[in-house]
Image (cartoon, rainbow, N blue to C red; front, side, top):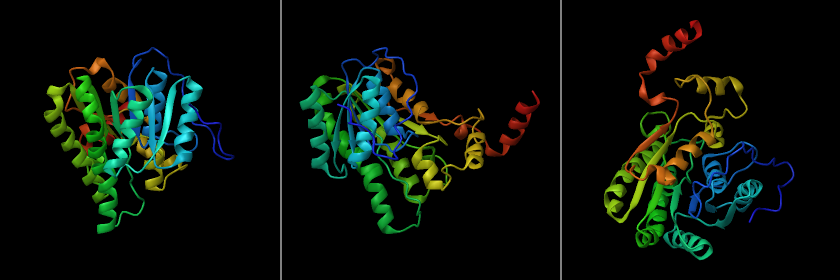
Amino acid sequence: MSGEGQAPGNPSLDVPSIRPDGRLDGLTAVVTGAGSHGALTGSGSAIAVMFAAKGANVVIVDRDAGRAEHTSEAIGRTGGKAVVHITDITVAANCRAAADVALDTFGSVDVLVNNAAIAPGEQANTEELWDTILSLNLKAAKLMTDAVLPAMKRQGKGSVINITSIAALRGGGGIAYSASKGGLNTMTKAMAFEYGRFGVRVNNVAPGHNALPMGLGFQGWEGASNQRKLRAEAGLLGYEGNGWDLAYAALFLASDESRWVTAATLPVDAGTTQVFPIVMHPILTRAEES
């Protein structure tokens, strides 16, 4: 169910070679904020494409039809199956409708990825900005989980994956954004406690300085190679991560390989949050001398 093609000036999503090993065969995944624009993938689009390539039926949920179709076209190129659903997931009825699309089209809801989020470039600490960010980044994840939960309970099985951020663990991401992701981290643990005996697992993937459209655009660094180099060097590995690194982490949490993993946060940040920043310079120096 891919799109008919890309609009002029909008290059197709750059998709790496993904081995179709059937790890998610027969599963249906709902991915929010899965739209994309241009060649650089975001977390939601990478996860949607990855899941489809691995055999899942994917419901692409986004509020922008053009962005959703852009991701759908990429899924079509992998031979995967996807359907687009355009809606505002800050409204409970819309979330229930998104869950119904998955059930009506594919017969189940096995995986939910709460990825939709905003990090506006304007980080003024205003009440309006607070309400806007918390509504999408935190409230919508709660509403979407509520919407798919009845089906997962009936199945006796399900995986909810929340895309959080290292901004929940460190300052510098903006007050409202960091608060929303911190709330999502804690909500994950509470949901895992409440729903575990129904067979529903709830986990987090926490991106770091990955090369994603939202992160680069938020910092005003898109296309600035020197700033991307600094972001890469902030991690212990010294090279840049991207949306596909996040997609592989989500793939593990979506599959039965993680059947005994719940209430966990998996950082995909090249170790950024696991060391004291002041020791980074000597580590980099030693690496250069070795």
